[in-house]
Length: 335
Image 1 (cartoon, rainbow, N blue to C red):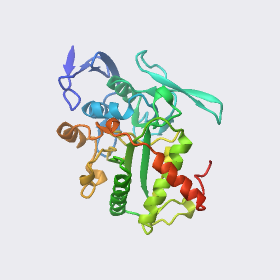
Image 2 (image 1 turned 180 degrees about the vertical axis):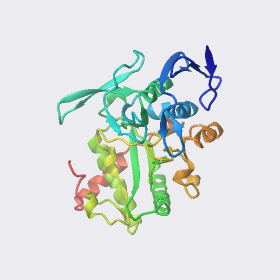
Image 3 (image 1 turned 120 degrees about the vertical axis):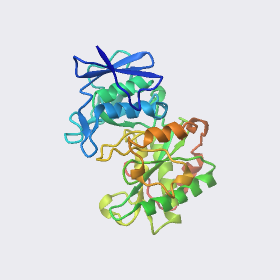
Image 4 (image 1 turned 45 degrees about the horizontal axis):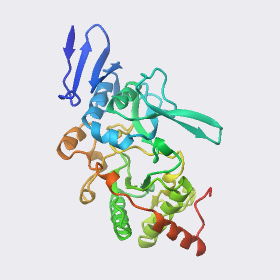
């Protein structure tokens, strides 16, 4: 006997069914079937949202989450017992993956080890990762055809302990201004925490060190224009807690941040959400959760859908970096 389950993910593209004799749900995603065990396990105790609710959320933003993860090595943040249990940061693909779940092998020189990380090529692999208790998806800013050459420059506005969202909004305006002067198109999103990310697509022609140098040069320009609000000081202990850190280090190799449309492991199930620039002045991070996002996505679609069409050559940033270093500024730590 089969009972049909309705929900945000159960549209004309998906058929969700539960076999009554088994505590599992079979989810049809295109031409794949993913068996989700313990669908009623509560992942977010504050709201009572379950593992199945999480699956249905990711189905509802399917095109967006796949676009954000496509062909990228991806670290998984797993919560096997929900938010009330331990969090697991997992580079290697969990055991038991179907043969259609794709991976990319990465080498980590510090330990001289390799890891086969999830490499999303279709929505079913996202659902399978959620079945394996993944809540958050943290992709690299490079793709598997050349993992050492980033194609995404990430601007991370990370508020200090005594910052607020109003400060994030102000600095987002400065970021937009500088990007406009460079001729670069930025694609903003909430972090899902207290900050804001802006992504810029770049040609995969430079290594991580160059992209990080350019990102620091950009951060320093933002700091020059808003010195009361912004810091690029490397060590956290040395930063003014009232200032926002423009975290250029998110462009270093093997540094990852939550993808667009990724749920975050926080009590109200916030989502890292693409925004229009004109929304930043009125949006609040708590506006965007697994409960509100399905309707928003159905209405607006993927606001980052055009990112691959807006390529920016980082040569001007590298010229800024050269200038800054000639004038006595230090290169990024570790270079």
